[in-house]
Figure (spheres, one colour):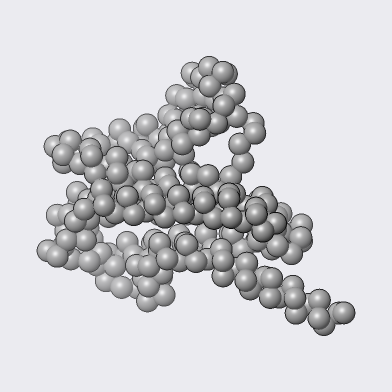
Length: 256
């Protein structure tokens, strides 16, 4: 945020809430993956219905903050690099030590980093457009392209060529084959439009025209998590793995 901008505490708290929800969600998957307990997978799958909700919060808040950032391009490059590091660890290093099935290709960090870079490049145009029109168009484009991974756009009215879905080269855009698997995946289409929605909404944040309660802190915990969201994302899986493996070891010792 720029030095002249009054901090919007609720944005930190919303981002912290989204990260906390993600950690809980991923914990159930890890229970199935690490401990081999099928109920972990079942709970994880059941909670997937809520995933678009809390990630929409996270992405919109990130879009708003892109309007407040001193250097959106630099922030985007850092987040994208972190996303590539996650892919390196999960898709290259972990399989070498026998941990298969947790590969992440174009996860949330890669998506957000790309969105930040694209938004930074488009910011001169974004600032010229009426933010209300920009929000409306962004929301419409998000809804119209939400089904791209299923092979259609415009609310299912337009079917995309089947040959596009025989390769994974277009995976960052939401187009991939049946062979593609990723433990965490957010394609630029449609999520870039959700990010743009936040960037246009950020005009109100930039002008300090949000409702006054948004500038007050309501939860120290969520505010702290939100301010350090990148580090929480990078650390949460190693920490969960370590705790679950430790728990498994203790159980083995008890019942040995």
